[in-house]
Image (cartoon, rainbow, N blue to C red; front, side, top):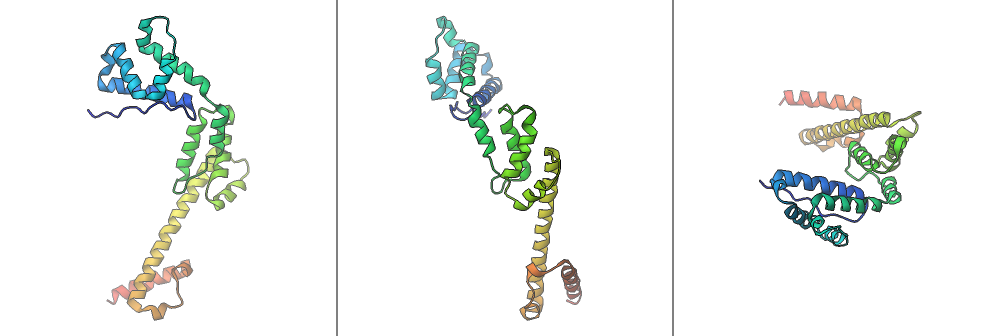
Length: 224
């Protein structure tokens, strides 16, 4: 079985959350690999090897009541957890949240999911959804959508997500419509010659002209 080893412990950003992830992945790794049945000394060595230099440095500074405790995995994991928890910098993590903007090519739903994930460990409490909504509006790339949301009264996160979904779906439909218009324009140009269509551009084709072009192209195909 080809198993992916857990990542090393990082003493940056949300250290407490980093530790929780590493611990969970390590436990999954032990179980999936069958190493969970090994002695604590062996499992401790596996853990330190996987967790990397930062974890080893932390471990080397621990004081144990007796020699056996140095290889007791439960005691070691608890000590590292106690070490990592105070390192959680709430102010910094909130800064990361409040400066998280939508990336180019990132969909609105993915952006919201990322904000939700980041908000879980930031002690926002009952304000979480309201702050996610505010950050969503401030950080989105689409100015038209932002303006639409800012005009909405009593806007909550659920309603904001609904509006975003409708807006993105409409944008996709417009893209498809433009592509079809361009395809028809190109096909007509090739068939009739650029001279008959010299005043026409794909971007200038309104819905009425679009329907006429489809009918025109259809009649042209019937006469081929």
